[in-house]
Length: 101
Image (tube, rainbow, N blue to C red; front, side):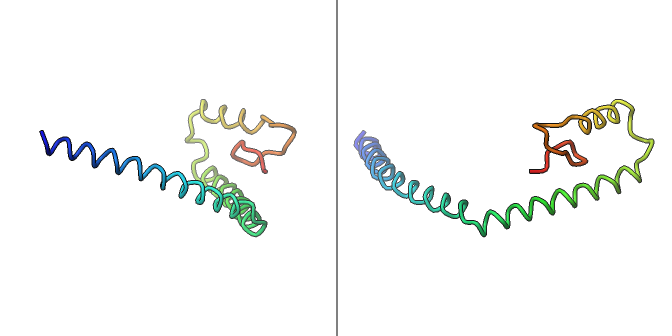
């Protein structure tokens, strides 16, 4: 019984001390992450990467659709067409049915 009590007291003490230090460290990390995310260089790099990803995805779509051709079931073809026809918030869409932001 003595060992169980010692274990529970140690566990409780570690939890209390860890949560105090953990919250402060969490707030520091959160602040740092926010500063990095708001950095214009980081934002520009992220947007460039996203744009390149959309371009590569569009090219991949065309390559796959050329190779697959008529082998796609009609239900899938209709779904892809309906996604292309949708227009969200007046923004143009890419070949995947998503908006170019």
